[in-house]
Length: 531
Ligand code: PEP
Ligand code: MG
Image 1 (spheres, protein in one colour):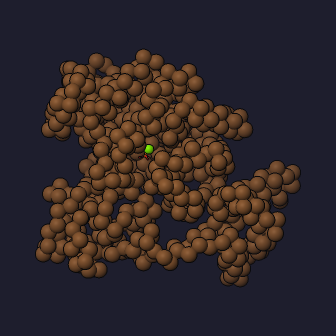
Image 2 (image 1 turned 30 degrees about the horizontal axis):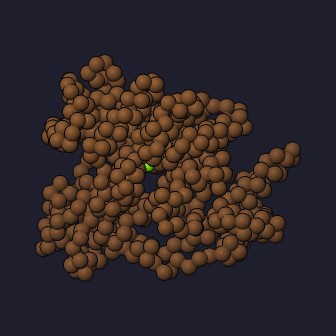
Image 3 (image 1 turned 60 degrees about the vertical axis):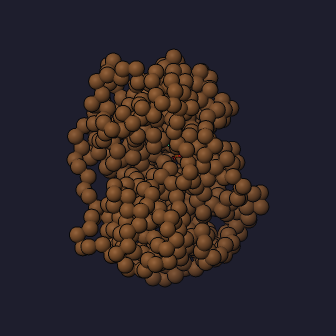
């Protein structure tokens, strides 16, 4: 038996047979498919299905005729020639086609709008064929690089754990695993990847900080989560209340909200829905998901609009590569060039707001102008769909907006949410995907304290949805600073609630933490020890 020490990206215990995964990034098998080739592939599929279908064969043939409409192809080609990606071009062209049919008086034509959307989805699907060897349930995947799309696929299987060659706990792939309770570790040892064999049994124990090859049969398996104990917001010393919500990115996680005792969803990472689907989703498809998310969670949900870019590049979008993607076209910066993307999503969110309490926040806002753009886009959609009670807020994750709280309040941002994963990355110039990432420290405490004070002076609700909200020292510090809501991975909801419930006096915590590095370190270790 070999024992390797490891770095923890997502905590937990697991044992199972190894599955060695090939990296999608390295896979040369992903040859580009043109829009024309994808259209032909989709048409062949429709023709084949129409022959074998017991009923509805004529509908499939009608869809094939729509797909082969030369005007539709010409529109897609014009859009790609103007710089749109193949996915966006297909989606937009089909939406335009569908909108014409939607507007027709003839009920038959109206119904064809749904067909053209299905055609668009089929065409998009044919753009990005991905070949990956199947993974068995309960396997421990061994890979070099952790990708969001891979983690979403493995979570569906589900795998028992992942051992990667590199990564950090703030990568989105790791955040997904943390939420699902799938242990993920990295191992630096070169020996390991050379020696490990497909099917060999390994065990991971992140608490002990190791994993073993050929463990005894009694190695740890998945531990069941304890039932929720505190299912309400916590009252703090001084009388204020603080909510503990959950960060989620799928409907299956929305179902777990009640069981974890979370006070709502503080961050729904909606771009993960696109990662999962492997294509863009129409407004109608999104509306259905958002409605279900609100109904399943049974609590208020804050949806974050698509935050595409950096480590969520959505392979199927075929976005132009940039030298520094985390500093490039990411989050709301993309909306100006891809208006349909935001328009469809906001339409779906406003429509779904009839099903329950929905708030919407925008990622990567860096200026008042950025905020105005988002707010005005939402206002236009609200008018189009006939209104809806949706509170609009801003993610405070680009340091520049930390200096704009009074302006954001004046410009009708209803709330703010500190995205500390990106805030610390941009504040410390320290890549969140790097092993060397620098997440916390005195300078950040002082900066966040300044933002919290500005928010309190303006009576602006300020929450936290970055990973620091689940850190015991920081959670208490945020509460002492007057933060109204913490949003954490699902497994952290109860531990954070229990911790806050035990606080009877903040004392001079904030003064101590903001004074000097020693005070900050003392504050952190003091609360971590009480965990
Ligand atoms: C953040 O940046 O802190 C955040 C919550 O969003 P994400 O991790 O999805 O970038
Ligand atoms: Mg972020």
